[in-house]
Image (cartoon, rainbow, N blue to C red; front, side, top):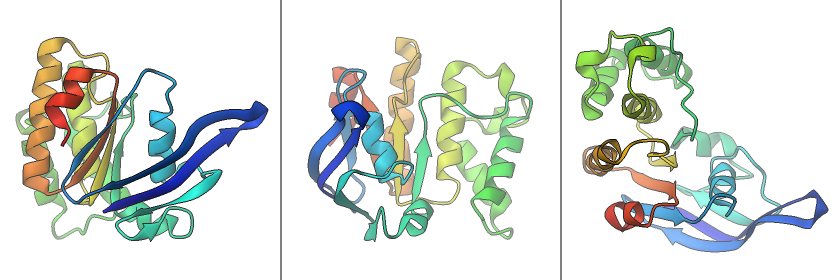
Length: 202
């Protein structure tokens, strides 16, 4: 599913953010990038998601080269960033409806797919509430639902439980495990919690 060979990212002043990473990640696997802040976890995800160009090395996502076939890579991935980016002044449903157009979800299945992902993250009953009324955990779940709208083969979760209290964090673990079962998707997540990596990762 994902093949990474000697992938590196260097910035000016000889700052090495990612140093020659090589790894193979299988289909429907939950793969964790564990490390402290500044270790290069997010930089690696951004390269795999075609948001940053690597300095050297190669990587393939579902058979597509991240530098030569960036458009095809993007069609096969979903990404949930550290900072929630949903519109607070829209409902959960409205946020997903807008992104269903951006993801080119076919009109014939659009409403069904929105309902499916809302059910998956247990937000269907709150779909008509404004996002500003959502708790931190609910906002994170909405972000995950958005990333799943177009049925990606791979979803990147960048610190999915950042800022959540322990009970909310454990609930999020359950949602992540469920989405792997239900959606048959490969998950790559970053975390600095050892217990989170042990709980979720293969």
